[in-house]
Image (cartoon, rainbow, N blue to C red; front, side, top):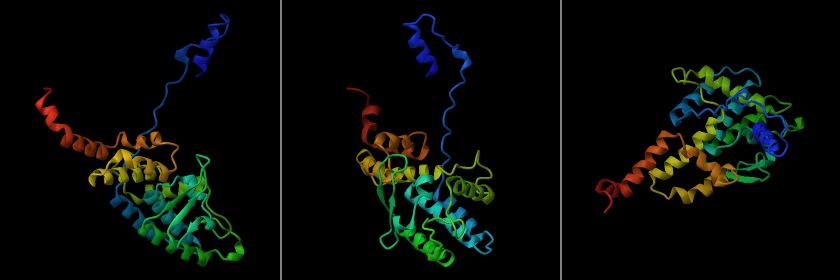
Length: 248
């Protein structure tokens, strides 16, 4: 951007400084998300349940478990997760209110039946450790007085993923944000397997995940072997005869 701006100015001002292009660092691409499958999530939750419990650490363990469940089953961003308060939670109906974070817009996120059960179980643990007199309304709490910060929750989940040993033979341990990728890919894969019109379903996924447009949602269609294979299989079923027979 700096180079292009200086080049633009130099067209009108011949003495304008123009830096050497080779002096600028190369663009580094974003790392591709590491796939996370349901079995790995089950093993991670089981490992979290086996962590030692002392005093209010039972609250931390329950908070870590719920954070993983909500990121994987509802595709929440980390910032959205740590900003949840009790008034944003409808445990009876299994619905979360997400206050605008990345975009200035709030949304309602309905949870699955299993995620709703996890939410209710966590609220029972939270009520046992955080009395109403504490005036702590943050949903995910690290202790009685206050909730988790963004970095604190990210660090806690990364530690669980690292020490669980689940990805010991993988190229790298998934990022915390990869749970959100896994949610989107699972939804796309389910729609392909059910034979649904994925293009017409994308706006629903974009609304659920809080994207500005479906252009952000289509990002998850790239570099995902499972989704690409299913899309190719559907294309072959519909247009395979035309390709194999050749153009008339």
